[in-house]
Amino acid sequence: MEDIQKAKQRFSIIGNSPALIAAIGRAVKVAPIDLSVLVTGESGSGKEFFPKIIHAFGARKHKKYIAVNCGAIPEGTIDSELFGHEKGSFTGAITARKGYFEEADGGTIFLDEVAELPLTTQARLLRVLESGEFLKVGSSVVQKTDIRIVAATNVDLLKAVAKGKFREDLYYRLSTVVIAVPNLHDRGDDIALLARKFAADFAEKYLTAPISFSEEAQRAMMLYRWPGNVRQLKNIVEQLALFEAGTEISRRTMLEAMPLDHSSSTSLVTSQPGVSYESEREMLWQLVYALRQEIADIRKKIDGGKQSPDPHFQSHAATQSLIKYQPQVSSEIEDVMAVPTLEDSERDAVAAALRRNGGNKKKAAEQLNISQRTLYRKIHEYGIDLDEGADSENNEE
Image 1 (cartoon, helix red, strand yellow):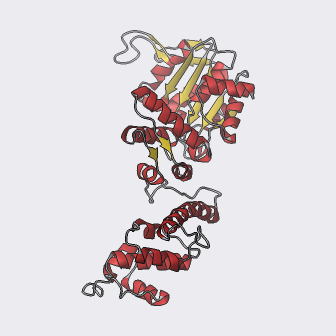
Image 2 (cartoon, helix red, strand yellow; image 1 turned 90 degrees about the vertical axis):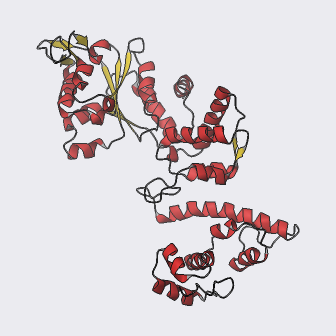
Image 3 (cartoon, rainbow, N blue to C red; image 1 turned 60 degrees about the vertical axis):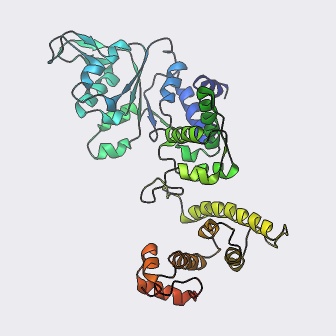
């Protein structure tokens, strides 16, 4: 545990989630043993820290550490970059050049985005892993290198193997030890810790008034999918630190800053493998609970401070009455109301769409993405009264 804390402090790793601690502990434990390591995890999750930990806590810490982004090097020059080339071996090779495997002899090479390597380069890499031997481009002289390789990828390499895009023998050579870096949305309270750290760093660097986060804003952050992981969180927090300097970030401001695309994985609540719809519904109810508390507080103020019998779970009739007879209450309350059953939720959605469109059934049906025939059936089924507030000229349009 002491080595884990040292690693966190040395590389400024923020977080205490069990999955993160387990990953760091695995890196520290394998560091003294000269085995190949494969680091897996989504883009932006912080995979680059783990080869540094392995190098710093291993026997090669006084030798060179070289990080190579395999996806950023053109296919035509990747072999030259990794293994070097001889003078005249290709157009433009006016002098001989050492590759990374020769430069880092005795040290560690980190191959990021290893799945992007061409198949021919994968064959060369496999030879290095098996025998420590390689050939420079344009040379027939075998050279030796004593190197430790740590690779990382955000791709499922077994699927890449099945598709013929990655060598199976290389996969098993690289994955002697696998370290799975957790995604940000699986790290719980670490999200709020990171957000506060990024906000404080921004304020200190640019001499701006610091921002803080309300409990509701932090809850919204913990429910968000974070497809861009830590990198995305830092980007959003820095935007807020700039444009909302000196304020407490509310839930609404936080939600507006987080991009929501319901057609993709970028949403507040998403389906993950092994996660049931019941767990998704539970997360939604957490949001609903917070909204009900806000509504209860507003009702309490309107009623002159009198406590309602059930402040957190107002009945549907009571909340509708509150909206109907208190015009000063924001119409946003009505849009976020939730009730205990799916039938009532559907009824509210239909009624709200009709009210927003002045009773115009055609527009309401389009907004609900249902046919007018279905809309008429729902109106009859739920006994929705459209006389009050409806636009008589457009009602049957």
